[in-house]
Length: 292
Image 1 (cartoon, rainbow, N blue to C red):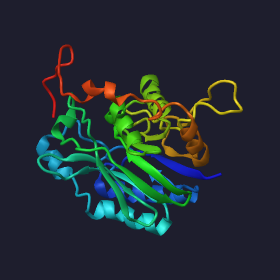
Image 2 (image 1 turned 60 degrees about the horizontal axis):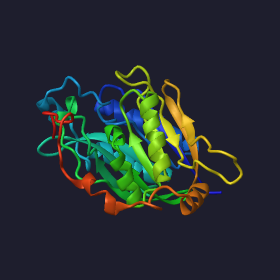
Image 3 (image 1 turned 90 degrees about the vertical axis):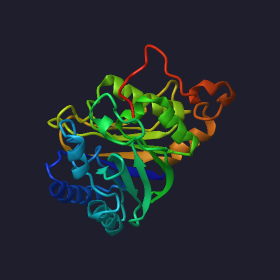
């Protein structure tokens, strides 16, 4: 059995770039000690998602380069630990900063640099630039290679995000997060995993961070097994509200067998009927003035 061990770093930020760097590196070392093959941070770890009251100028000053020292430190550590790391940041970008995930493989190579496509334009993220594509990469881990994609927080509220990643070959979607993970948002993740027959790992900030409550999760997407009469719970990890490193073991063999035989994902789609989904149409009651 091939099991991918995922560490969700549900941690309190430190209030400074330097503090978040030091704490983040130590969290990764601890995750490796727990047997992790991949470690994932919450959304925008470089600044702890502290953007609500910041002006555009302040956000630009707080943003860092994806190729700079903060991010590169995690790449070096990934190679040292032989563990994949998904580090998040407020990325310096023109015309406005971006909300970004950089994924390193266990050799310290950058495999994916993804920026949040669905920025929360109804709030502070109107001051950020949205990303321009959904990305999937083949990630080398100690448990073997796996096709990994990414969404960030609000992206998960659009079924198209996970659907595109599935169509691009994703077996696992990483989701850095910074919001209350209540029953409806958890249901979204469960649904995305179920309908696309893939795993979704979400890392949130713990209780004590404004507007966050922990509840990091992993859904493996496997709803049916031959030996069971009915469906099974696809949730293999649901963290509590407290700060901590939460571990889940994803059975890759079981997931891949399920994907090769079951009816969801891309098995019976009718894309010739979905043309409206790609048209840019805004009609009442969904017209909003604030939009990137």
